[in-house]
Amino acid sequence: MTAPSRVLALSGGVGGARLAWGLASVLPADKLTVAVNVGDDFEHLGLPICPDLDTVVYTLAGVVNREQGWGRADETWGTLEELRALGAESWFLLGDRDIAVHLLRRQLLSAGCSLSQATQTIAQQLGVATRVVPVTDAPLRTRVHTAGDGVLGFQDYFVRRRCAPALKSLEFEGASAAQPSPGVLEALADPALSGIIVCPSNPYLSVAPMLAVSGLRAALRAARVPVIAVSPIVGGQAIKGPTAKIMRELGVEPSAAVIAELYSDFVDCVIVDECDAAQVAGDPRFAVAHTVMRDDDGRSALARACLQCLEQLRTDGRRSSARQITSGITCG
Ligand code: FO1
Image 1 (cartoon, helix red, strand yellow):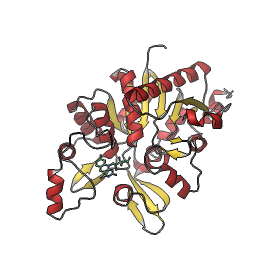
Image 2: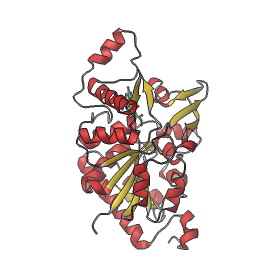
Image 3: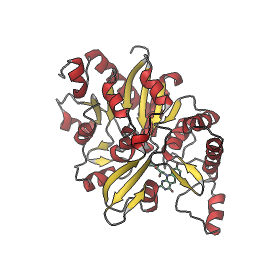
Image 4: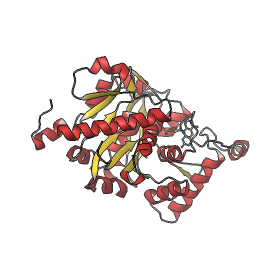
C-alpha cells in the first residue's frame, strides 16, 4: 500500500466515532481530519452540549464509556444526583467528568473561541492529536417533525422520548446560512487529500445535517478524490440507534442499497457488510468488508478496508455519476 496521504472522514453518532478510532489507529495524526455532526448539539442546564464531537474526542482519547459509546468511562454522578434533588432537569445523563468538559467549552465559547477552537483545546487536553472539527462553527440544529408530538429538538426526540414519536420529517435549522468549518475547508483544499469517507452513521440523523451545510455536498460532488461510505445498515437492521425505525417511518426499506441511493450524487462506492454480499454481488457501486466493529481490531480492519477501497478507486479512476459528466469516465 502506498504511503497514506490525507483522509477526511465525516462522522456522527457512536458508529462514526468507532470508525474514526479505527482510522486514527492506522493513519498518522496529521493525515486524518474527522469532521463531526453538530446537529445534535443543544444548550442544557446552561451548558453547550456537543454529543457527537465529545463522542469522537472521548473515543479517540480512549476515555469513552465503551458499552454506551458516549459519555465518559469511570464516571461519577454526584452533580446530576444533586441537580435531581434540586428539582432540575435530569433526563439527559451528564456525569461529573462530562460536565467538566461542558463547563470548559462554555468558558472557551464565552471568551470568544469558535467551536472549532474550543474542540481543538479539549481534544489536545485529552491527548488527542487527530484533527477533530465540527462540520461547521455556525449554529446548526436538527429539528424532528413528528406525527402527533409537534416539532422536537433532537435530544428531546432521541433521549427524552427515546425516538418513540413517529418521525415525519427532519429540518436542519441554520444549515443554509452555515459554512463548512475552517478544518473542513482546509482538508478539502489540501493537495495531499486522497479520499473522503462517510462513516457508518445514521444517514438521516447524523449525515444529512452535515450534508445540509452550505456548499458541503457540492464540494463532495466536485472532489477530485474518491468518496466512499460505510453502510450503517447491516442485514436490514441498524447496528446502533433507530435508523431502521426511522427509515420505515420515512417509507424507506432499510437496506444498504438505500444508502447508495441517498448518497448517489457524490459517493463512488458503498462498503457493505459480508452478510449483505449476495444482495450487492456484481454491482460496482458496492464493496464488501466486515463492517460490524466488535472490538479495536475490527475497527482498524474496517479502516484498512476503507483505505484499500479508496486506493482501488484512485487506481480505477472511478468517479460518481455526477462527476462522470465532468470527467467523462464511465463506471464499469
Ligand atoms: N444518550 C442517551 O440515550 N441518554 C442520555 O442520557 C445521553 C446523555 C448524553 C450526554 C452527553 C453526550 O455527549 C451524549 C449523550 N447521549 C445520551 C448520547 C447522545 O444523545 C447521542 O450520542 C447522539 O446525540 C446521537 O448521535
